[in-house]
Image 1: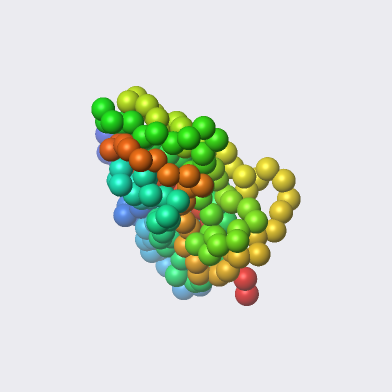
Image 2: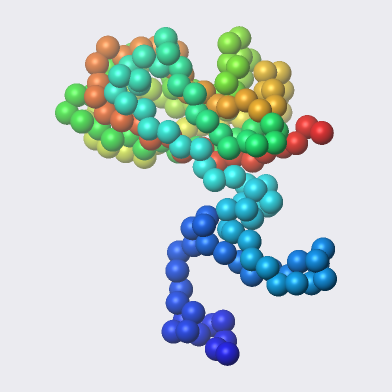
Length: 182
């Protein structure tokens, strides 16, 4: 049998959540079994990122029609955001958000929300140049409570202003953990 370090016998790959690890199951007489990398993500406290792509029309109306970001939460745990990234794909028609406008991500029950998880300056979309945007992590700024963070809820993206033009898209990717409440 070749050594694990032998990349000819065992080619180096970029793993996906569908790939497998070999483990020893101590609960079953130390039998050898396999587990998916995806199952280890949940076991280690990290979930695959929640991702969504917003169309130009959705971006223009984020104030009036917030968009739900579904998270994989089979246990109805609390969603704890870890990091977030926006990728703006510009077109020749930029948005026209007013200065000071924000795009925010919060718990799905954001009505009357005291705090948001992430926010960014919406005027970053007022351009014809595609860009990667790193929203401010308002979750980690200071100790705070999130009274509307109820178990099993998703996330929502919304804005505090509207744009009357714009045709680009905005991909949002959020890494999160789940915290059991029982």
